[in-house]
Amino acid sequence: EVQLVQSGAEVKKPGESLKISCKGSGYSFTDYWIAWVRQMPGKGLEWMGIIHPGDSAIKYSPSFQGQVTVSADKSISTAYLQWSSLKASDTAMYYCARRLGGHWAFDYWGQGTLVTVSS
Amino acid sequence: EIVLTQSPGTLSLSPGERATLSCRASQSVSSTFLAWYQLKPGQPPRLLIYGASNKAIGIPDRFSGSGSGTDFTLTISRLEPEDFAVYYCQQYRSSLWTFGQGTKVEIK
Image (tube, rainbow over all chains, first blue to last red; front, top):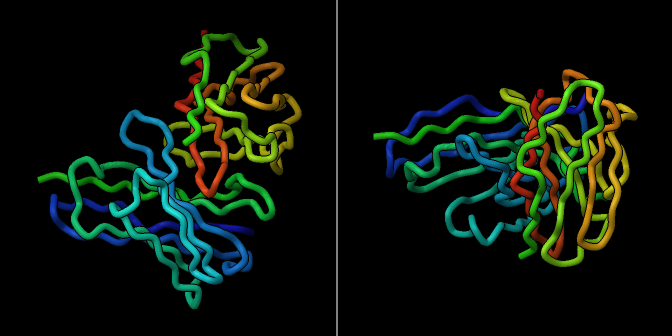
């Protein structure tokens, strides 16, 4: 069974750093792109970036380029999303999702990680 | 960047009725690159349709997708109670994915 399991909810202060994770199982982790998607409170879905764990190729949305870093450790089948200096506006639910092989949609999703940034 | 505009913003319908959701792109989108998702509170998004008209695994037959160019449609033939949710279209082009702003299907 394909699963993406994300790390737990985080509460941080502005200016702090954070790295959240997404562990894949039940499939060949290095063969599928993993994307990150943001949902701010009461808002819609926003694609942030995507990584291919096999070769670490990465693409970012222009809206998020320079604001976050996407990475992966294929030895432990885990993708990451990190911030060096959080802002209150980073408060949101963050999802990882697997790109459907050979297509341009996301078929399996993590359960989401809620990040709250507040002083 | 391609902008996807979904309409209506909210659709108020009764169980058993037909739902027709629209997704319009600011530039032509290949059908191959158009997908639809369902989002319910407390759950991650669920892929319904990819390639504009292909149903994802486990998606009931009452869901169907159609369209081409700049105009795409998600149709739910007969609404079931579990179908009341928010629906998003998504497109891919030039290494970028974008979502529409969503259509909420609510119980009338």
